[in-house]
Length: 545
Image (tube, rainbow, N blue to C red; front, top):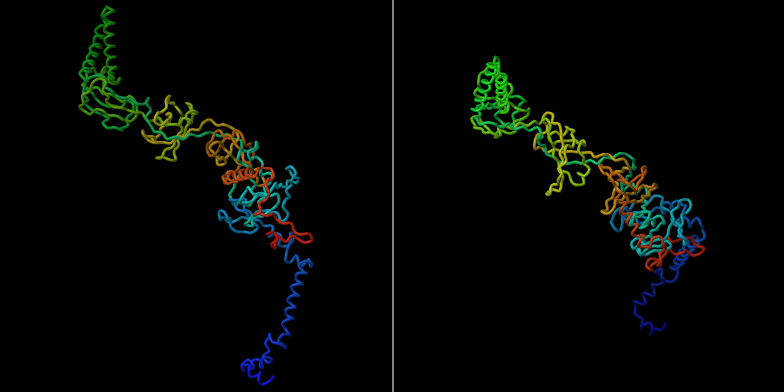
């Protein structure tokens, strides 16, 4: 290069050019390029060998993509569902996207690709007892259906609709709006579903009512004055005192009683004088006077013992003692010592409480079955361990307009005065027993219009039935129709079966029942694609997405 040209080149550029061959950078020429291209060629060769081995070496293909029958087939076959939303089915554990509950494993879940094929021919019962799939539906939108397995926009598998799930939804076999429920053993355990057999036995209808203790009106006696006089002395001078029959109650002074005693004594003396009289009429007249005077004393309630003493002594007494007519308690006291009395005035009331009445109010539907003479049992709050037995003694002929109840009277013995007047008691009455098919009362589901029970058909299948119920009592119910003796009915968690049955019936009705879906799958829910010929099913690697 000439000196003129060298003068136009900067000095630093010239220095870099002079130092370039000595730096040894990879981008520079010379020995720096010797390792780059061999490494790149080796990487490309390995990738090409891997692709060839994936499609041509079976062992390597199985290692990366295991199919049914391999060690990972069991994991791929596992499916999980929600106990509250059984249409949610996934192949991985987790939580329900609707309610957030933990998903439970489905027992005996079919392996991938082993699902039953939907037949376009009329539905018929498959051989061997296998359940036949009619079509598939979107788990989130039941109106979207498919004849073949598919996935929705969220990647969730369509739920198969089996032939046995479409029976009875409004038909003649099952109640309107219900369908048969198929539940696995694991779901039965988690939900707490229990069954009990229907047995043939005798059931009685108990009636319980609150009653009030009242005295037996036939055992209440009032001591009244039949003459004018004054109370000289009270032998029973307080309310509640226990008296026995014949015990002195009070002493009364009456001028009329004194005169009657004297007349009686004079008449008796006249009879003695007329014994020697030759006139028969005179003797009969004197005897009549004696009898009249004695009868008058008796009608004044003068005790017989007082009259006998009067005859023996022949002396008139100033006061007459009145005795208790019955044994019992003094429940009423209207007089005190010195009180002036007149005919018809109540002096004392004596009540025999050895037997009492219980008056209880029964509702109309209960009273229609009660009969006089039926046995009843009584319990009290004051003495819970004591139980007394009595009977129905009277049924009142009219209803109470205020409470719309009928008053029934029971008669009970009262040993030891356990039952006191105005005490509240509980009366239990067992109506006549009826023999028939009996199930636990908890098996009944009351809808307001009808009663439904779920019959355990075995293998996790529960069939809803409408039943007619008769007598109910002691936690049991008499079934008139719908269930036979020996069949098992769900008695616990049957409300879950009720919800599931109604849901399945509603979904079946929305999707047209047993008929095949009329509309094609939505573009947003594409069906599972068919793998190309000559290749395995690689949907697990994203081919189905």
